[in-house]
Structures are given as structure tokens and as C-alpha cells.
Image (tube, rainbow, N blue to C red; front, side, top):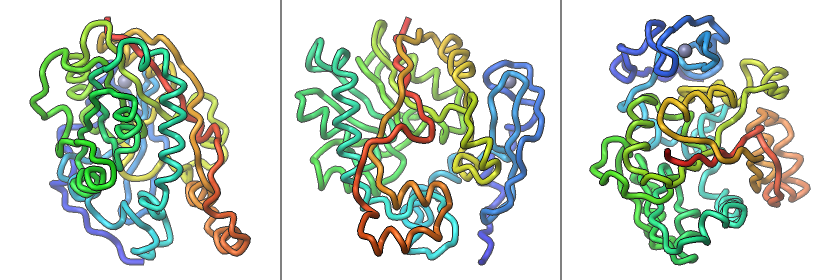
Length: 307
Ligand SMILES: [Zn+2]
């Protein structure tokens, strides 16, 4: 396996053991040294409970990563590990089912004062925007991947701005609802990001996101450094207590914390678990892409209200 050379300028040299955006009292201990991807890095845990990757990837890293084949398809690159997804676009039926379920579960927010101005940060293929649009909302997205922007436009005719949300020129209080799913851990500049979320959500509006909860996470404890969160570019890992601290710091009140049930198929689950040996078996049985709902990862959905 060839090593990927990632230039030093793809990392944030101002982020180090001297910085914790959350507590301002950085005291880190090494949790894992990760050596099974193409370049070595560490995960460190601060005394406040948040964990981060060091060195921290910067915008150049993400611009490269989210437009690269290593992200979209391990199948094409024939790597023996998964950085991004086994085959991203093939997972679309899972995402549609998940988006519909999430909309329904959050209907107390979405169905109250229609239409809402919805922003989805990192909407990937645009499935949730599509579901929101079908329910008569004004829903737009913002994504760093131009490939997703074009794909979502073509497939669903939904609008996604291309760029980093925190750098875009949106108005203060522009959005009734701002959502992100499977995004929060991939944001290197958390302080800048949460400040911009606070500014752009209107007072009383909602900030909805999910996160993989490291609180009593037995899968993580069993798999240790092989757990799917300890891979590039996961910038941060959270517990619920850490999420509570973040919401309080950036002006939001948590109104609900629920299980994030998603539709997944076996091929995806097995690759997340790194059980690649089982892939030929499920394919032979033709059960590799059957979707079913699962409380995965374990991931939580937080609904927070802007104070
Ligand atoms: Zn800290």
C-alpha cells in the first residue's frame, strides 16, 4: 500500500496542545496514535472531555479530501481501508429513507409555520433538501464539494452553495432552521463555525444536528483505535456533556436529545466495522444493499433553540 504524502500546509499550525476552543484551559492526554491510514496522526482528549485530531486538518486538506476519490469510493481506489464511503452514490436509497424519517420525526418543528427558511450545511447529495422542498419549504444547502452541488442540482433540482458555511455571506437571522447531519465532527474551526451558526439562525429558531456519542460508547471501547470515528478527517469527537457545553457557550438551549435512527444496508455497516471479509458472503446472498432502520454508531439528534 502506498503512503499518501499530505503537504504540511494542509494542517493548521496554530492549533495544538495550547488550544481548546471549548474550555480555554487546554490539558490534553493522548488517547490514540493512529497509524493504519496513509499518514500517522493522534487523537487527544482535553480535560473538558472533547477529543480532537492532531495535527488538525485545515481548509486545504478538506478541499482536497472531499473532492478526491479516496472519499467517494474505496471500491475505485482499491484501498484496503475506507476513508470515506465504499460507494457513496449507491447509498442514495438509504439516504432518502433516512431523510423522510427525520422529517417526520421533526414534523413538530417543520409543519408548524410553513414555509420555513431552511439551511442544510453539508447536504451531500441533497436528499433532505429534496424532502423539505417537497414539503413546500425554502430549503438551500452549503457544501464544500462541487461534485455534490452538481449532482444534487441534476437529480433533485435543489440549490446548494459551494463553499464553507462560515465563510459565506448569509444574513444575520436568515434561517428559521439550520441543520447538519454527519458534519459537526468534520469542522476544524469549531469556534468560527458555531459563532456563524448563532448569527444566522433567527432568535427562537432551531439548530438541529447529530453527533456520534462517545458517552459509554461500548462499540468504541471494544474497537479502540479501529473504531470508525478515529479516522481522517474527524476533527472532533464529543460526549453529550461536551455538546451541552458547546450549546451553552454559543447561545443555544437544548430542547431534545433523541436516538438517530438511520436506514443502512449491510455493505455499509460491515465496512464501517472493517469486517471486509464478510462482504463477499453478503453479496453472494444478495442481501448487501437491503435497507433497514437501525440505531447506529450510536448517534444522537439534538434539537437546540437559539436564545
Ligand atoms: Zn478543553
